[in-house]
Length: 558
Ligand code: FAD
Image 1 (cartoon, protein in one colour):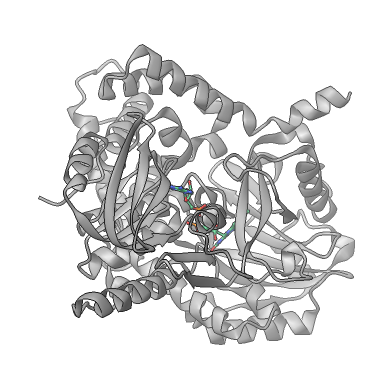
Image 2 (image 1 turned 180 degrees about the vertical axis):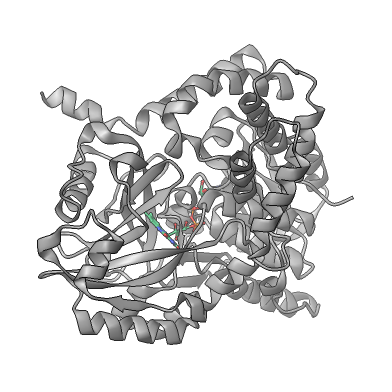
């Protein structure tokens, strides 16, 4: 039987771990860490991943949720990066077609903006070439009238034509979980709520870690031949513990997104546009909402719970209202928000937006391997480079030949489709099979774009639920929850409502009506004690308020 990322298997993982010396321990369960775990497991290395919060709870659930082709790198003349991320995008689309979906992106040219008509046309042409863009997704340039027809909400007097190109939309925290589930299928062990508190040394070399299971409040020690620090914004904290800081260090910057009802910013397609201070911003429709961002400001606080403040939100609202003036978005329109911290590498004299998004590996004298910088989009190549270092070190010690990276050919969990285009037929097929259950095609479609080829498992759970009087929407919700507990190590209400389903960001109003039901069901499934249940409720309600907390600042100011 394949291994499974189940909440119920935590005790087994903890027990088995004590006796083992892993080839690799990965610290950090964001996209960088899970990518490394997948690469290592598929090369046959024994691997343990430890995450102190929930998987993806750091930056990897707080991005713009795009698998970029790398257009911004072209502006910075980072040609190698454009080529690499362009290829990565195609690979990810093949291997996780349900989660990495092409979307047309409008690029209006704004009077006195940062984009010129001819430079944009040339830039997009070079980009198509370097990124190896598919023929049906190549850029097209258009006159003002056509652009205004494509997007009637644009401000007529400042638009001077524009372009249309493709970006790939994703769900970052679901990407994290699908990568990790695949790593576990290939043999990796993984735990959330497992904070590495110390590194363990022998003869000045790192040989293991001590960690705290914050659910059971127990400490453990585990041995590993190689240890990778993939803790994103926390990379330097571990490097400091290891006494291995050098002249390279992280530079954290905060990025905020806001969410409004789709009807308040009903764009025909996503848009990437200039804002008055010379930066650019995305506005991206997704089901019933449109999300807009991002900001880019220096950040020096604790990265655990970054939050949007009033200044961030006003900056975004001003930017949108400038380019789409008739919508007149206001603070009250904002339904939710999220803020993330970019773990970039410091470059003296550069502003947040100018800092390179390149990744870098630091190899410390203790043997600790740290990886910093990078993007969601490039995670597979970052993992390949990191595991190449691990493999080289293992070979030095043990002369054990280990295979090369093969993740380019590995379908992610939920991504088992021959071709990305097969998804539409798959939705129709599942809709037909679900006749009689009360599920609509729309509901099936939503499930497929979340869980891909794993959707039938959820439908089976739903059919087996004997609580016939429950409304169908609640049955879907409970089936998703049961799946999440059994296959995605959901331990808390927040894990499910925020990271596995994105409901806090994209469906906050609906969530308000159902989060008690979710918690009751979770209590039933996991047999939570009253005390734990209450703690989970409190923790969730803090998050629930935090995404609109900036509105309170305004009330206080009034
Ligand atoms: P994280 O996701 O932060 O993961 C690190 C993990 O380590 C955390 O979960 C943390 O809890 C854990 N950890 C820390 N210390 C310990 C410890 N002691 N023990 C155990 N665990 C520990 N990239 C794109 O490609 N496309 C985009 O559209 C995009 N948009 C972005 C927008 C914003 C606003 C931001 C901030 C970033 C964006 N990025 C984007 C970049 C991308 O999101 C990040 O590069 C990426 O998510 C970083 O992942 P990570 O795994 O390195 O860090």
